[in-house]
Length: 327
Image: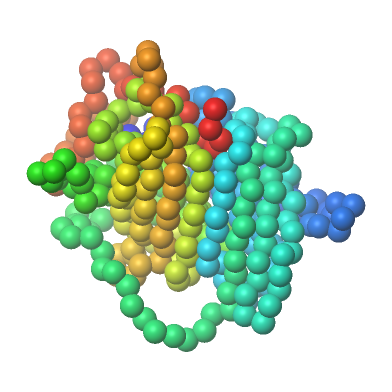
């Protein structure tokens, strides 16, 4: 089974309520230029010294969502991780109203922690309208979540792991991570909360961006460089979605991936694309396997294209993975 850092360590003590509180930005006023300013605190859920990138994205998105009328829906966001955010630190998010048109509104968010810019994001909102309907279907041979055994762990998410698809003759994979997920408890009805939680999960990519070393940590410095999300349709994060990740290319010490989220009814509601640093370490790192990992592996064994087995004595550590900002 492929183990994501956010599944094994960062969220070990977090509840759904903790997650909602953490991703929700608090309005603090306006700066001297009249721009709205918001604040968040990075929770101390992580083993390392970097906040998970999905949290950085979700907090900035929460700030932007609070500056547009409720009838507008988020449809895209594009962000760059500039510097890491230290767990436990406060971040301010300054929102610039780039444009408010008849159908679209554009916002730019600049996030600053410890006096330094950490994340910069542009996002766009659209008033819903009728139009053509077309989408790619859910991936082949995907069992429904009820047929995939889960595992008990203190995460806010119920995750049903399917692993990667079978390796093709040319060494490539159709998908390098597939999992069903939803929050373990019902979320508030506020669409902004669901958008932020989905944005958070969109960065839970596991080691899917390194097809030559799937399921292993500690062999590379892994760091998210940017993150783009397209919200095609409103969707509840407390309903099942299949997260299907495809690694497109590893080259120049970087990886590029894309991913989709389909609902159990086949609705394609979100797409994601991301580039990451994958810098090989001269000396691999190792940390002990969490007690629940063996049980989780057993629960998911037998599904098509399961990930590599974990080595005896521990899981290879992910020193920078999923964190924001490249060294």
